Length: 99
Image (cartoon, rainbow, N blue to C red; front, side, top):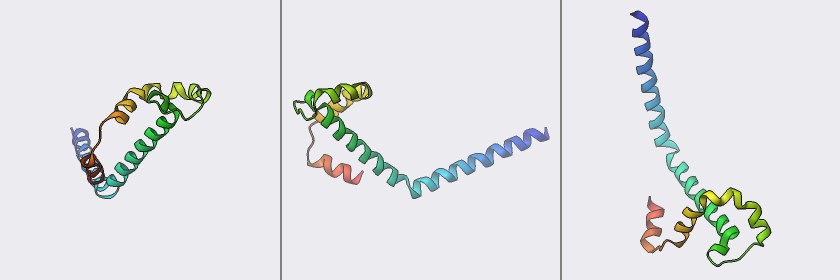
């Protein structure tokens, strides 16, 4: 019975420590991590546009290099096409800057 009391106490302290770590993470680096993820996504979209621009009618690289990179990009092509062809307006740009 004494060991179960210690186990419960250990679980509660662990939960409190985990919550404190998440709060500190949110207060310190969360915004920076989100900005890095956004910039990474933008760079990935730009890279795929350069490599597979022919899908949208923008031929940039010779087909040899495109075929070498094809296996790595196939899972992301549908989402990329949707994001590139999505109509954007001025409010989308402001939303990206604020949010």
